[in-house]
View 1 (cartoon, chains in turn brown, green):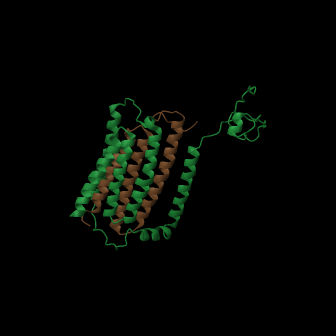
View 2 (view 1 turned 60 degrees about the vertical axis):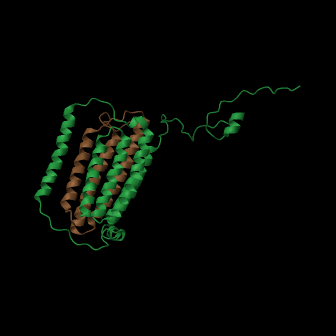
View 3 (view 1 turned 90 degrees about the vertical axis):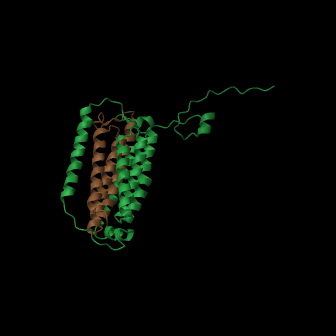
Length: 101
Length: 212
């Protein structure tokens, strides 16, 4: 390997920071979910980089589990967004402070 | 050398597209930028010889999750756009500082650490066979937990997506307990079918036109 593991993890850290910035600043729940996806994927990249460094498969399996978690999170999050939009609620995360009827 | 060039191009692409996701004002563009980001990450996985995960990334994320995102964004239309609210500048600045603090901290820790060279791996490393053997033997519990999680998420998606029936008062008969009154067949009900609950307004019977 030419590029060491630290470069991959560095890129993953930068991506995590960008996703965190998006979660902090954006108000649309869809873009919020997209930012969370960026953060989860950056964690996946770090897991796979360290897994390659150690020469073991465990990190890759963990990354697969993270992918399933991300998919589930997207399903529930988008379901909530659609249910809210159907009730004609403004899609602004600052005003959506209570999950009730 | 080629390895390094691919790494640099993929990392620039990943960071630029992640910035595009966060900064573009149109959610549809954000989702498209995220597809680019996922493709760049799949390149990283290939560089790290995680072949199966690269394929899974493209198929599961770019193929399934992102399509769902795009569908929902298109379904919501302009409703999905960023609500126009004047936000105080200090919020953006604080978010920038908080995000930058974590990145700087992580990069500092990475720069300070010492690294062994990467362990040598067999050519089978990262193949579907290798991952599957680990997933179905040593990490079987994680596999089962993942499948239960996916089932729960699917049920939750159905529950969230279903329209609730109209709530009724206590003692009010439900849809199947109501007394059924036979509808006098009219032209409309004959066309619609009497058994449908479609509200049919009976048409007053007309006098048959007498032809001369």
